[in-house]
Length: 537
Image (cartoon, rainbow, N blue to C red):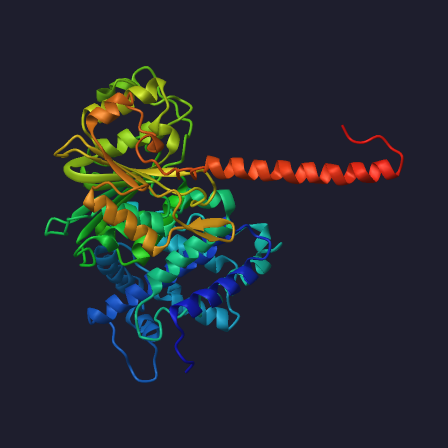
């Protein structure tokens, strides 16, 4: 047996192999294959563990668990019983002929036919329909695996061969490190980040840099702890779900099963599928998550029962968001009547939906909760409708903190951004300004926040005190005097004083220069006279 590798060795090796296999396929598309097959393997092995734990199958000498499973399900009647048991407990069912182990046997024995891949996904989707509560979490989750993509091969046989290579790669991934720790979630997160980095502009659509997520998560979980009711977190533009997961990781007691309830919406269907897979690959049970495929601005979070008849909370303990910056949207004359926007005087302009996302998220924040949202700097000082909304937020005492971040942190854009922190239960009208825009580490073509940078921001947030050239706790009067303009440089002066000039020293140097010039001119004139030329004037 080969020696166990460290998690970094496993990650590096996997990424190198994945890059070799993807050939000319764009990284943002290739991720749909490798991540989907990783997820299918995870679901299959999770089901096998469940069957063993429940005593439905057990190891037998000379047989694999998959062999035993096949023998336990010999006919349609038994298959139906197992389908009902599995879908009730897990939300899905994978029959013996479609398990990951069965697929690997076919690949190893060169017995895979092109239709096999379509079959395993079709059968999976059929099984999820047996549990209505789970259907929304599983249905269509593999729909982005384009089995007919010509870049996999020009014929069905060539495409099946390419898919088998990906399956073989995924099967070779070690899900535990040298210490025996389960690293499946870490590997999945690493691949999402690597694909985001390789996808350029498209990468920013589905991944928030972990260091930024960590700041946001630390703030919304500060002085919070999971209780028996479960801590609820909502991301209205959830991307791959990584920001949601970071909140769960930061919450005290968040690692306990069912301690955190995850809610999110994502407009892009491919990214929506990725979010569902990512959460479950990190051990989140389908019963503890609800991710919707929806345009958050045009379709509000369900208030009461959703389309499946499942009751949804209207407000959450934490709201986090990294929405698309200054996106266009389509408000109508009646949009101002929408309960999300009606109390703030205006709706966000059509050309910039930043405040629409902010107000949507804030509407769904409960009275004791905290919201963090990443936005472009323009929301701090732009006038017109945005100025009206910003002033209303300040007067209602909802804005708690503004954190200015360095430029070039995010995938897909180099613009500097801010994190805005909002609360409903503030006890004073002060706003804390933190200017962290100049504290970062340069790495290739991107800036990074170090652990030290992250901790400094969070510690400053907790203390809410002035820090020279870094932070200022502004009073309501200061903000009012600035006409509700929240541009950070108005409150945190990071300029360095100019060096004092010693005038006597300057005059002495000028006098010395004049003497040297006069002596030089004297020498030149003497030489000109020897040459019979006119002296310098």
